[in-house]
Amino acid sequence: MSKISDKLIRDFKKVKKINKVIDFSEAKKARETLLKVNTDISKIDRSEDLDPSHKVYVQIQNVLSYFSEEISGFKEFKDYYEILEELDFEYMPSYPPMSPVTSSYFSYFCLCDLRFGKERETISTIFKDIGVAYKYEDLFIKSIDNLIRSSMRFYKNLKVEDGLVELVDVITNERKLCVSTSGYLGKPNEIWFVRLAPNLDDKFDYQIILNTPYVVLKQDEEDWIKYFERQGIKKSDLNVEAKVLEKMKHNPNTKYWLNYIMDGYLNYESNCIFLTGIPDVKGSKPNEL
Image 1 (cartoon, rainbow, N blue to C red):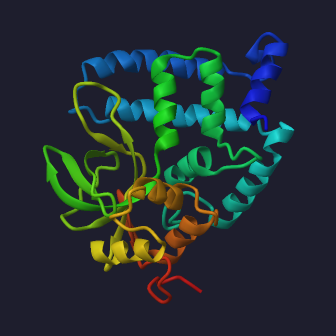
Image 2: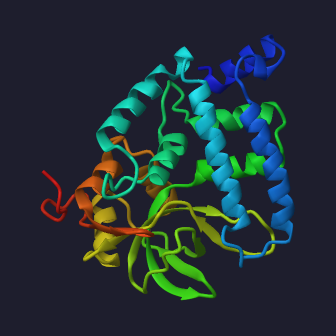
């Protein structure tokens, strides 16, 4: 079975130049920007307002969004845009009070998690394949690959140290020092629902929180461990990472986690959003029908 990316690459090569099919001028500008940021990464200074790695991911997100707009008329993407139109209308992504589904959450979900077509590709995997075929810069490919591997997860806030939040995955027990890009640092034992991506330099070992943190109140770590056990995912499973990734990133019900955010929404601040409830516990979420 041929992938959509394979067909696009073949079509681009037939006309000799990718820009004859898609206007990639914005992508070209982004790649030039990334080259400059790459220099910044080598002499990273975490005292800056915007972490250099975060700058890269923001730039990549913009390029992926631009790419998705450019290919919207291609018949291969008809299914994707039908789903996207429905989700956009139903959840109206922005920020509370208009919608608890934030633009950052929705964008990464649609670009990196939402699969379509016979080969179950995403916008990000298709763009990465094109980037590899056209020999895009290593940082460009690495950044996209990190986003492809990323997913929303549930973490417990352990502590704040030197401006970084230490989070631990409630199921895999992996500990991560993280830059909270919204500025929210929270307090120990809070449960956070966030998407992480690795820092891109070799000097520091920390993660970038890509979305405004969703902070789950009332339910603790044990409640979430029991939830995952009911989903057939136990801490002791040999393939626990793969199981969690599939549940969180490619849930068969496309609306599963979007509905959880809508149903569990409580309140918000400028740098975080508060939820409560467990997806499969009836009556635990304030807005469920």
